[in-house]
Amino acid sequence: MKLVYKGFDRDGAACAGVIEANTINDGTELLRKKGTFVTTIHEEGEQGKDLKKVMKRLPFGRNTSNLVLSFTRNMFVLLSAGATVTDALESCERQARDDTWKRTVSDIRERVERGQPLSESMRQHKKYFDPVVISLVHAGEATGRLKDMMGRISKLIHKQVQLRRSIVSAAIYPMLLVVVCVTVLILMLLLVIPRFDSLFKSLRVTLPPSTTFVMWLSETARTHFFILVGTIITCVVTVSLWYRTQNAKRTIQTLAVHVPILGRVVRHVSTARLARVLGVLVQNKIPINEATQLVKASFGNYHYRALLDKATEAVTQGDPLSDAFCKSRLVNESFCEAVRSGETAGELGPSLLSVADILDEESDAQVRSVTSVLEPLILIAMGILVGSMAMSLFLPLFDMTRMV
Image 1: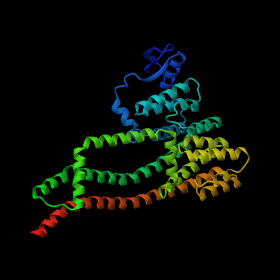
Image 2 (image 1 turned 60 degrees about the vertical axis):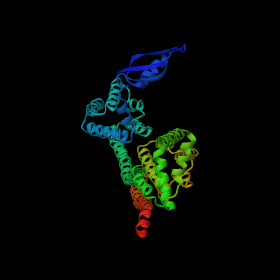
Image 3 (image 1 turned 90 degrees about the horizontal axis):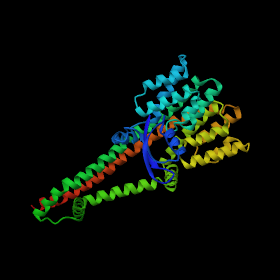
């Protein structure tokens, strides 16, 4: 494909142009070898598709897990039917609807046709394929059981997608309630309360403190509307920039696993994922010390990454894997017992997968339990806020009727 780039040459002079390359990574590497420092690079004709790019960055714009799930399922079905790897990849390429994903599958197919292993071809697209998936594909190639491995990978991703969907679906209603509550309050401050304000001024009514405060709040919101909006945008941008720092991520990740109620759910969900991914890797003959590092690469939380480093160190020193996990509060007792009994019986993989199924069910139940508590609390808070504001507006009217 044609790539448009901008950058600087060896002398520091600005340069721009168009090159031919299979992927953006290949194009960047090619330019680097020529002595060009690349500042921006994109496919020709893609620069104007700003809205499409923004939509794809949103949570609902494109889900890479769903794309990889569909890919591994199709590969399993096609390989089971006797298709070669290149034929299966060509079929997946034809079925792809997303343009970027289609180019990704096409690049993988071309690399395989040139003699590169499938796992190595997938490794060039880390945006879609994490280290766990790549290692499992490599293990399938090494043992000659790529077909079966694709089936196991699709089951692993399917479980993760299912859990993510259940969490998102459970969180949608509380989030919707919050949005409705905020919208109602804003509309009341900007549209409803000003009408009462003009009414009270025309009647020259003495307002109680609560009504005076509501009127002041409405007038401030209307008078300094753009200043307030600018302040909110500034705060959002500041928080976003702060969130990108390493210290911010560690702080948020620490709160996520230790905050009451919610922290327990996060730990349960993370433990379920840890058990499933580690179980699949161990069951497919990946060495334990390598498996723990692969699981670490798939985790974003700093605390779980540190825990997996300790587990790797324990295994390297010849200690049981359960010793490292059981000393941590990040995993629950059922996981520790599964690791301990699996090590003793020599069935660590199946033991972890069994406890992962149980933990997935418990995680789903915990998420729904938390949201079932949050929903009435949000409704009560919304009722108190809107009701208090409405009561403040009607109090002067009640006083007027008593005077009459």
